Length: 187
Image 1 (cartoon, rainbow, N blue to C red):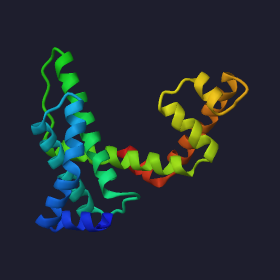
Image 2 (image 1 turned 180 degrees about the horizontal axis):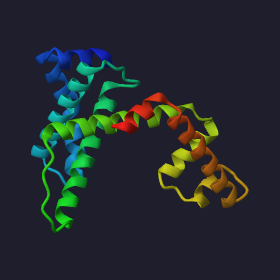
Image 3 (image 1 turned 60 degrees about the vertical axis):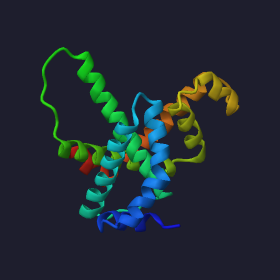
């Protein structure tokens, strides 16, 4: 099994054997996700291709490392692209005005930027205390304060709300103090 950087280098060098392996190993899960969320196989193929191009361009411009498996990382890239596509479609359908379509290149840049922001968020989430990780993970998963109180054995929902507030504040400070945030914010 290849490591993540080998996959990225293979994309940049257009190694057809490794790219075929990426398709064989990862496309089925990406396709299933997109089909389950209002898409089709053809759309899944487009999203998958956009993901490959996005990673290739991003890695070519500024090599980076992936913490975790390539498969999980790439699936997340595709899921984020699909989410953006759904959001754009929803906007197109619900607004009764004309608008200019964004270019494909602009979409790739926005997708890459969103992915970098997501990575920074996840990295900083890993740096907070274990207690904050548990609370924020539950909070971001939309688990009710009542359930968090019971699961983590807190005295009351008020205490949980205060902990969530303090943990979010620490996380936000950590993110905003990182130089990468300043660079990502300016784009």
